[in-house]
Image (tube, rainbow, N blue to C red; front, side, top):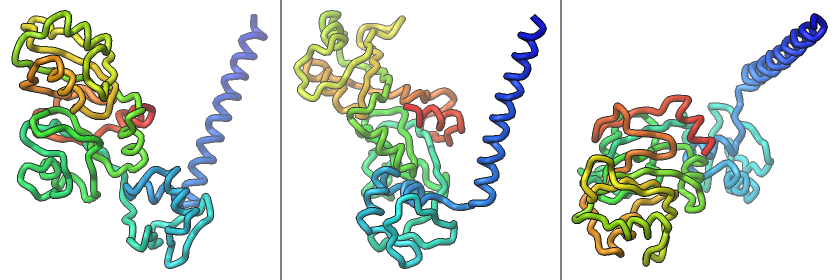
Length: 268
């Protein structure tokens, strides 16, 4: 029994030593290196994902201090001048902001100074240039995420990405149980089907108020689902997106994500 306990102690010490060694190596590497991989630098500028950046580097469209770089794994310093297609990239800090979008604001960022642009709602939050992930139409409210993380943006915007969202929807009339079943079983006339994970009446409310969980980067298909069955959605509110909720986030307000939330997002 005593030998077994000693073995357990030795194992724990060994595992602890390995973890400490790895941490020291990582810390040492960060201190001695002080460099960033070129593909990561490009992704941080919001251009594309790191994988795509490697292809652009290989194609010879990236310059560092005036020199074309095609070497994979090349690293840059903070004061290096990096150009992509002859445009200088900013070495931006990665930022993630969650907004509770109000009604009548547009997610089109072609005109960020437009009075009802959602870009006006996060103006001054940070010095980095952020873009929204996906779109919500003008009358749809709820969660929308902004970032300059090109890799994450590309990942969450894919139609094949299993991104979960929950919406609360108000209809112009009661939803028939037969139609609710059609939607739940993904049997309805809409051509560009959105994958419905779950749908139900909101507890304690009439049958005009619906909760629906989908797996899709867009909400426009949801509206079409109900319209094709003869219903007019009078309110669509995204209350959950990729593990994020509206808790303590009033309408029209925004906040930075926590490190824990960022980690969860990247694991999607």
